Image 1 (cartoon, rainbow, N blue to C red):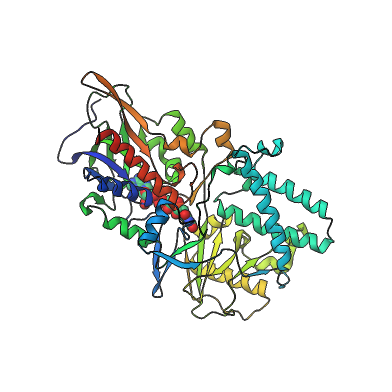
Image 2: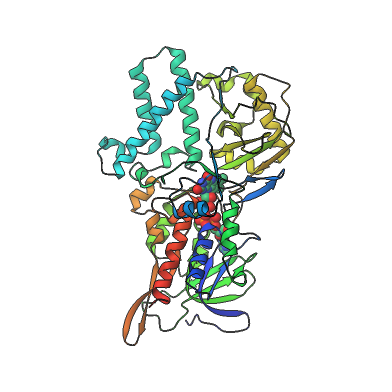
Length: 494
Ligand SMILES: Cc1cc2nc3c(=O)[nH]c(=O)nc-3n(C[C@H](O)[C@H](O)[C@H](O)COP(=O)(O)OP(=O)(O)OC[C@H]3O[C@@H](n4cnc5c(N)ncnc54)[C@H](O)[C@@H]3O)c2cc1C
């Protein structure tokens, strides 16, 4: 089959980059910097940035997607700093009042004690990937089980009075909800212990924020591109590639766009989210991807978290309060507590609400698990009502106002994301795949002047392909740069 077609609705170019999120933009800018212009960056939606998504609000910005730039020694961190885009302010997460169901504030020492226990258990899990012995049984296990068994061992050993033990369990439960959100997984039982230490933190403050908004780095990258090469509003519907062992012609990849246009290229970099790939890989690629790539797409995890912003116009809380965290009683009897009857089922998957920097009357709630799915189906006014009942329940104050406006993300129902970000599952260990498997270029062989050469024809980039910085913007950025450089090495600098 000769895939190189030529008619008015077709085009031959060097390389196509699918998706103008931070990975696709990084790839395109890398080509530009090498004065390579024979590329197209094709984006399905009417805007760039993907899961970096700042929206204007009250003379400022709110982030529907990425919130923090973690560390400042990554390539993206350094770039953002050189450009003066990073704020001097460092913020935290999950701060403020830890509220119990009886309206009381939780004892701060107990919060710190339980946080430390959880942190220590997770640091122990990291040691496995770093070849430091941990209990053998744990390695075969998942993060959820290891945390639970070690935490209850600690509780037993402490033998605290019952009310202290109950309080510690409530704080532990908050930590579990926090970790489910942090890792964008439905359950900590899906997370591999063996691979836990693969994720590396970048040096520097963990929660950098942008002076203005996250998309300011996206705007800068777009400004570095030849604007004719960026195509918005144009979903790619099919990627056909030549899997024969010997490429007898150039342009072994054919990309079909929704507008029926066909582009033939030497190579394609695919930066679509893992969620999109999970749903589409069997119809999107022809022939199917090689087995390792298919297995990686199937077994790497991709979960859903969402954000809820509540704007009250005027804060009803004291200026020093940084947020409200919710602690639930855990005993089975509580499920029948009549006071809980008015609460919406999804609120149990929130950790709490943080006061948003630069927006004194706006609260941001993070939600994972089933609740993250449920809120996508609700109207904004329903979410406002459900939150009003929740705040009144915890603060024991029936005159607290309801929010005037709610803005919520819906990362799961957008067909170009189908979730929020990736994690490494136990199934990855069993099937022997990791983000690096997906990052491995798919090669074609070409005979030129009687010499065989290997050329990358399909390459994946994006957050789910970074072995150590998966799930982050700085990781996604690096993968785009890396794959573009592999292309340049084989097609340009030879
Ligand atoms: C709620 C939330 C909070 C987060 N918080 C943080 C944080 O604090 N810090 C952090 O570092 N990271 C955070 N992340 C993760 C971070 O946003 C992502 O890791 C990163 O932005 C992913 O970039 P990407 O280029 O890999 O993918 P994407 O941003 O998903 O870009 C891929 C692009 O491909 C396009 N596309 C998909 N399919 C097609 C197709 N068929 N044809 C054409 N185009 C297509 C999509 O529209 C999209 O624009 C968060 C994410 C979410 C959702």
